[in-house]
Amino acid sequence: MAHTTITRRYRFCAAHRLHTEHLSAEENWAAFGKCNNPNGHGHNYIVLVTVSTPETEKAVDLARLDRIVGERIVTRFDHHDLNQDPEFADRTTTGENLVLLIWDLLAPHLPEGQLKKVGVIETRDNYFEYAAPSPV
Image (tube, rainbow, N blue to C red):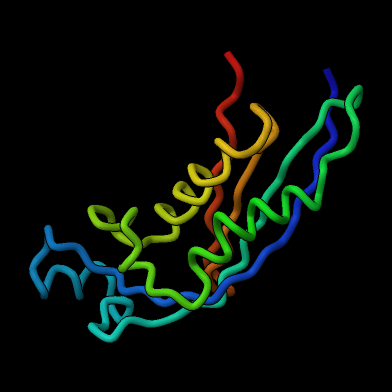
């Protein structure tokens, strides 16, 4: 069955420090460089959320999608320190982990199969993406 997709863009500003307790101070600096600064640093994140609807159904309810992303993602992370978020208690605040967390926070609140892809633009040069697993 054919599907159409739409991608919506959302923004939040957040700080973080790339650091893991599994490495020494020297190893953290070697792995993360200036992003391991003890004072942290910030980004103006852009989150791209792609959803689809079978052509036989009505269009995606964009107001509902905006409300879900606003409540679950933007409110949670905007002007916060990602390292203080409970979901990052035992994982590093990398873009890879952030995009997976955003997926996990959104998927249960959208109709099954509707969420297709989440992308996170962290910097001009860093983009992270997670897409729905292909159906078997």
